[in-house]
Structures are given as structure tokens and as C-alpha cells.
Length: 110
Image (cartoon, rainbow, N blue to C red; front, side, top):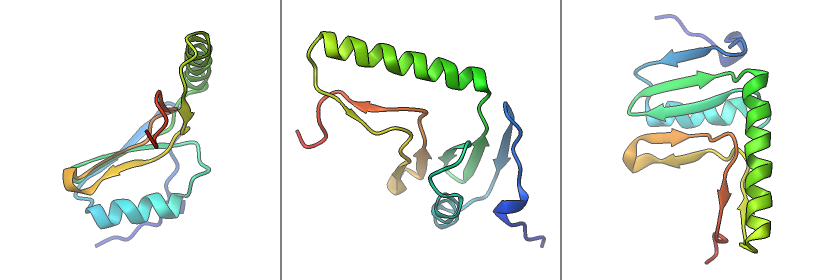
């Protein structure tokens, strides 16, 4: 068996890495080790982990769409709560995802 450390893995912009046979515990440990301040996005489903490094063009489009949504919600006087690229995890579904940006259109406390 070969052991690799996360710091050894580099994902160039626009590329992805797929890791298979990853347990839920390993997924959570990877999220923790990578930390919150990184340029990659993670998606986990039933043992498969995808690590994606978006292109700069993707980031520009994300910002434009986010800004347009904020303008629309302000114009409609609709409350929102921005959660950024929060990692959402559902162990019972063996799934986790990191959106580029996300909002609750109604506050989470409602």
C-alpha cells in the first residue's frame, strides 16, 4: 500500500482529481486537513471524492451571477443569508458538496 499526503497533491486550474473507495470518515478528515481557505472545491458521493480546481473564468462568472442575484433579491425586498462556499455534508446520504456560492433566500432561523 502507498500512502500519499494531501500536501503532495496539486490540482492545476481547470482540472480535477477523482479518488475512489474513500470512507465518510476519510472524507471528513480530508475536508478538515484542507481547511477553508483553498482554491479547490470538493464533491463526495458514496465513496467517490472529486477535487476540482476552477478556472479564473469560472470564478468571474460566479461573481457576476452572485451579484445579479443580490441585486434581484434587494429589488424584491427579499431577505437572504449568504453562506459563501460552505461545505454541506449528509452522512446518512454519504454525500457532501461545496457550492461556489450559496444563499438562503429566507433566513436559516425561519
